[in-house]
Length: 632
Image (tube, rainbow, N blue to C red):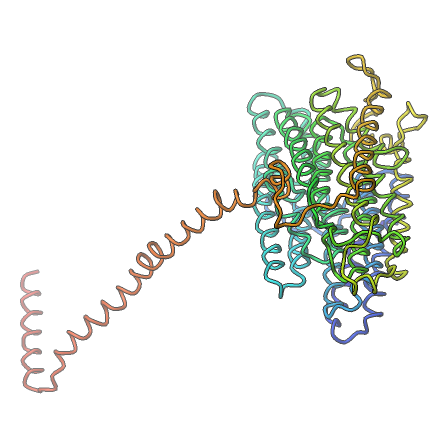
């Protein structure tokens, strides 16, 4: 029965090869249909795999022995268990909807075939990442999605800024990837294996300070890898710039799949992280700091995609907060719900951009709800979901994380609630500025306002439905639910823990009330400011209050990185180029060459062409040889 499972990643790879080779020969409708169909079939196979895991447990698929050196062996094998089965459904299910959306969104683009080839290749590598039964196969997928991210962010590479954004993403991801790679080397050295099945059973039996330091070192390096891929402090600045890519790229890669790879990797490795409390504490602190910092920046952004980008960074921070406080199920639950509502919001933003002729500045939008009703209603549902308002999906997953956080640290909980309030405010701010009030664009843009075609609106409707009902996957017992997801993941994360105890005089219902109340207050304030008072953010040329200016300019983090990292490295590279390379290495090589030339110029003077002189030199040579022979 397992013979077909290798087709799940192979189908997108086949789509990449066919569309890549035939990008200039095949009709666009064939390319779009093929690129979407392979993902749809992969989704069907993923559903089958999910049902198989549900019926008989994890599935191991060994394709072949890849690397064998003595007792060390790395098989090319897949593992489909409770965790990877859910990820398969997200990658292929949401991926198919985004491919379908791309048919309409990219239809007039000259690189249509290349775009679908890149999307298929990305899905292939993402599937490798989650299917791998060892860290090396995971790392292949990890690097592959980084490559595809580079190709897709810089898809419109003729724009220099877009090309720079792609390079920035590539370089910052490589920094994190180095940490992941070193962690793999340490596992090879100490465990003589990179296979999950070999490493994880050994970890609980390890004891001693040396082992504790080893696990702390490995987990910290894995976390460094996760910070790069999942855009956490300090390696987060690439993701907002990645909005340079086409909007479907933002939805697929930078909302639903690739940026959650770090969460998946840590959740997969939780056995090691459970025994490294120092690392988990760092993860919780970094995750919370990222969530707050990105939310503060999102409060004042005027580019609709930048708002969603910083929102993504903030929500990823929530997920890392969950991992740090031990809420593995809650964190993974938020991965699922976030894939639904954030993919919806990005695709909705793409529909808006499509309608207003490529405009992304919300100050030049407004009044679109009449012209784009489907886009408006679906984005409204997505906005309610991400704001954590019940009974939508984001409420349940955020509550799961915040409940565990309160038990871990009440202070961190209240900071998390403030962040949730910021989320509600900037998301409804985006919605109100985009869809309400008077249209603030040009007359020509207003004349061409229209709802997107069915290939774009159908995915919006499906994702909106999922954003509404997705929370049913893990409704807590206190609300009458059965916590299905927690029980589903129990074989990996342990027995379902009752995270909703009364702590410090506040019950779970009280905690829910606080977070929901904060979100509703932020909604009311946003409504008052942007609907009743019809406030529009000031132009870039006008002055802002100090805090608003700092937020709008992203607290000058990019400029700070430029000053303390890029410029010193540039100066060092100039030094190495001019002094070490040109004067040192080139000087030595050129000196040897010129020395040889000059020496040969002197020696050739001996070639006079005079026969008498040659006879004289022969005699001198004979005498010298005889003298040498007699002496020795």
